[in-house]
Amino acid sequence: QRALVQADLALAAVPGKTRSSELKSSALFALGRREEGEAWIREAVENRGDQLDVAYQLHLLVEAQRFQAAEDLAVRLLERAVAVGEPGPAQVARAALGHQPEDRAVALQRHRAPILALVRSRLVALYELRRPQEANEVLTAVLRSLDSDDLEDGARLLREPLSREQWQLANDVADELLAGATTPLPLLWARGAARCKLGRLAEAHADLSACLVEGRGDSLAVDAHDGLAEVHLARGEAAEALDHAVQARTLGSDGTRSRELEAQALFALGRTEAGL
Image 1 (tube, rainbow, N blue to C red):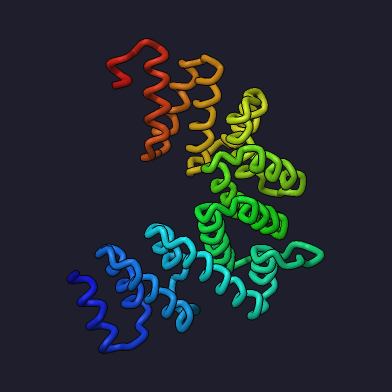
Image 2 (tube, rainbow, N blue to C red):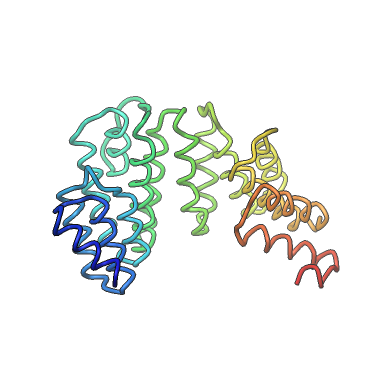
């Protein structure tokens, strides 16, 4: 409540102030005033979309389960990107809206993060609105529209179908794109994760192992170790699974997945107390 009061005071002093607008929408949702929060975000994005962190605003709508509003605003902002006409963002926005793509992929360059965040918001909204076929079409079109240099970031969009058990789709899309990718590691991870779930364990192991580039200790390496732990557990190789789960935590994983896999491996090795 205090944050909302402060945001209103700041907006009274400086109407349209970007940070105050964002704080107000956060405060409204935190107070459970979802209709007001949605209305405020719609007005702010429409009138000050070029200044706001629109990805954060759409994230708030998704977190508040205002999926139709998130879909509406994502479409509106993607249409705006098409109208502005800068080659990279416009190309991806066209694909995300189901428009006919250009003849070749165009690099996103400095606009990569904002436009991909909009695409992700639209994907989440479509899946949650039970429109999976449309979401899958958007995902496939967007990834096909990306320049090979942008696929490392774009491939992270494959986490959405993977999290919704769309394993065959994730496998097929990653498989197609790997042929032209200059930075294929996230695509290899996505394909490996999908193949593990599809029971193609040898192929999954090969893809995920290839992600463990020497000296790379980022979130992709954590995900690869988690994936390999899952593969080894499926094979009944608990000691190897434990090793990968521990390595994921050593690299700084604070997620529950690494701990769950470590516990499963410990239980499989008969180390019940350690697992607990």
